[in-house]
Length: 191
Image (cartoon, rainbow, N blue to C red):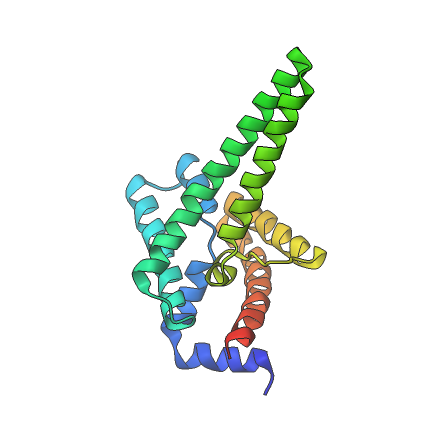
């Protein structure tokens, strides 16, 4: 039996896992965008965000056999703090670049770049845990095709959330087809 059929049989036997799969694959930035665009209320934003976190945790517990509290903590930590850390790195880099532009002090600029490189490499090692592979599409050595698929999914999510729902079904079908293919690979690793 092919891997895809095994996963489809698993979803047919466990419909709650299928629903969790659908909800867990929604990126949190889409919910933030819809909230700030005024397309959903604050209550709906909180409810959907909690549902996404719970779905990801359910998936971790059911499929990957992780502790549910640890899974929720890691999901929240990753989704909240990694973008903030990357923004901090970007700000420090820009400040260092301006410092170099005005003072022409190359050694200080090189030290700043070296510290940022150590920080970013440490973050990438910390955030590339096996349990995050399935949740956030992060692989230890992503190939170019994997990168293109991820960019395509992100662009399609943006298109889907900015167009009327009646026109968004084709984009959702493409998104979930790509996500299903990614999940089949992840599921194959744990079987």
